[in-house]
Length: 408
Ligand SMILES: Cc1ncc(COP(=O)(O)O)c(C=O)c1O
Image (cartoon, rainbow, N blue to C red):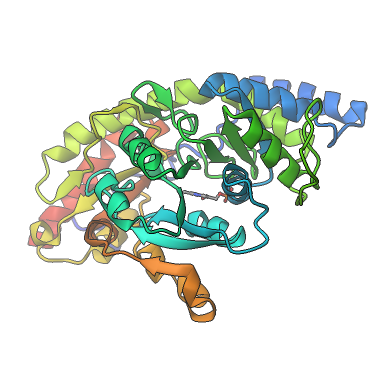
């Protein structure tokens, strides 16, 4: 039996000779395109307002998503803040009621809601997709609820038809957190285009990136107008007027970001297809290993964005060794991986800090499914899914090697 790399053996995957793809993907032809765009922006001396490039990208991304309106902003968190305030027609400067957020997500989903005056009610997720559970959602609605924030987590769409039906029944607004799901498809509709507004992050790890940045998409001119005012010191978009003056932040991005995004958007679908191919391969290979269970994709998913590739680890099939020991062994074999979100968002130190100072801003429903997802998950990054099959084959091989060693 071969010695584990963490015990001094030879790793299954040699990162020096076969490095995993790095992110963002770069190429000389694309650099030529970026240079042309940067040059145009630079010599036009229009690096910000009136944002001709930003508006051009917004149009391209809206066409891609199938929405009528959209605007670039400085981050996914700020996009969520703009959208939450815009769909509720508020300015975020006072208490606004409750926003329902799934308890398995990045802390920014909740933080955005707190920042624009919402209390957050954390709700359980579906056991497989780890997205907001429609049953748990409906049970959690209170007279204070105003907005639902489904998160298309790890690139997997939430069950939007069921969520929208609940929202309609209770007259609630829906803001999709699509920060991890660029290009994902729910019953052939793009994530981020289905609710009252959808929000994206272009932060550096994201499947579409400009280093930092964000986007609000909507098909409501009214929501667009208010989001625009909120991101631009209270000013409406050109050609539109506000009924009354509105408060507004300053969340406008640089024009250079739009150049990167416009060029990279052209590659998004091909990259997404490549990740899907890799995920199909890994699903098939890993299913055959007792104790490793790739997360099942719901039937309504017409395109998974695979921002992360999740699988579940069952210690009993690995000699009872805890997940932390397994991920350490896998990393030593040359397979980068992590346990992902190990805590419920409601248990996050930031949430605890918010709760201590403002107990009225945090409410938590029972979340047994989310607890289990936190306890069992292992993630591979989207970047690894861009590798070729020869490299991907090292993943199941390393898992088998570790299983054998843990059982010895
Ligand atoms: C689910 C989710 N929501 C919101 C955000 C916030 O995006 P940003 O980092 O661009 O503010 C992220 C970023 O990681 C995210 O993953």
